[in-house]
Length: 408
Image 1 (cartoon, helix red, strand yellow):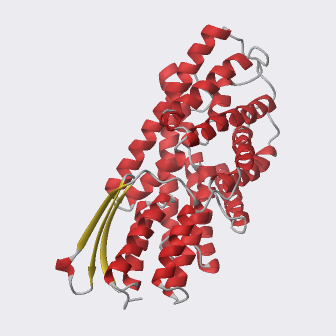
Image 2 (cartoon, rainbow, N blue to C red; image 1 turned 90 degrees about the vertical axis):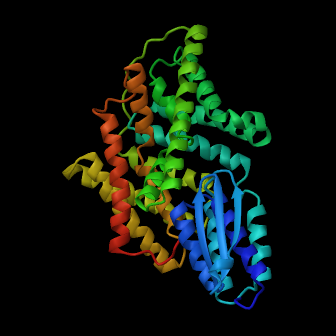
Image 3 (cartoon, rainbow, N blue to C red; image 1 turned 135 degrees about the horizontal axis):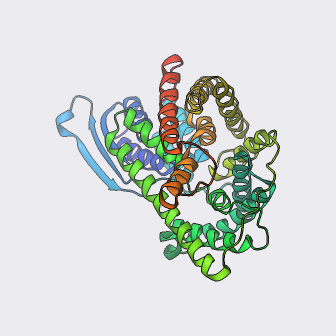
C-alpha cells in the first residue's frame, strides 16, 4: 500500500472521508479514523470536519511543506450504520492486505451507491412503529399510542414525497408538523381522549434532533468546536421549524375544525415501557439502515440504556439516571467493539436514542411559548440541560474505564 502512487492513496483518503461523513460519522471520530488510515497508507494528514465542509491536508512522510489541500462543501450526513460498518470492514481488508488500493476504491464507490437495504413498505411500517412506541414510552394512553402510529404513517408519506421532490424536501420539517397538527386537531372531535400535542410530537419524533444535540455536545467536549457548534445550531433551528409548523397547524385546525374538549383517559400499563423499548429499537434498525446481523446488539443497547437509567433514577434523580444509562451504554459499546472488531457507534446510538431528551426540549419550548404543558414535568428546561450534560459525561467516563479499540 505504501508503494502505491501518492495520488491513488490521496484519492482513497478523500473518498473515505466523504463517504464516512455521508454516513453520519461524528467529527471527532471521523478525524481520528482518517489519521489512522493515513498512517496505515504511509502518509501524513490533517483534517477539519464540519457538518457542511471537509478539509484535507495530505503529504508524503517527511515532506510536510509540500502538502496538498482538498476542500469540499458537503451536505450534513444522514445516519447509515450499515454502510458505515461495511466501510470499516473495507479499511480492515485494505490494512491486512486482502484488498489492493484499486480494489478498495472501487468497493468504496459500490458501498456509497448501494441502494437502501430496506424497502419503502418496511420503512413505512418502521416510521409508524417509532411514533407509537415513543408515545407508549411516555406512559400515555392507548388512544395516543394508536393515533401516534397512524399519524407517523402519514408523516412517512411526506418523507417519501420529499425523496422524489426537491421542493418538498426543502420544507419537509415544518410541513410534516403542520400537517400532523392540523389532522390531530380534527381527530380530537372524534376521539377527545388524546393529548393532541403529544400525538403530534410522537408522529414527528424521527425529526426531533435530540441525538444531534447530544453528538454536538460530545464534539464540543472533544474540542471539535466548529463542528460541535454548527451541529447544535442546526439542531436548534430544526427544532424551531418543527415547533412553528405545529403551532401553525393547530391554528389552522382550530379555524377549520373548531375547539374540542380534552377528556382524560387511562394510562397504559407500566410494563408496556419495556415493550416500547423493543419496538423503538426495532424501528431504529430500519431508520438507521443497520444490517440485520448487527441489529440484536443495537436493540440490546436500548434495553441496557433504559434499564440502567430507570434503576439509577430510583436512587438518584432523572439526570443522574441518564448518566448511569449512558455510562453503561458506553461500556457495552466499547466491549462490543473489542469482541466483534466493529465500530462502537453501531450499537451505542440506539441506546442513546432511548436516553436523549430531545422530546423534552420540544416540550419545554412549548411550555415557554404557550404556557401549557404537554406532560406534567417540573423544571423541564433545567432537567433537559442536565440530562444532556449527564449523557456526555457518561460517554466520556465510559471511554476512560474501557477505552475503545477502534477510532470509529
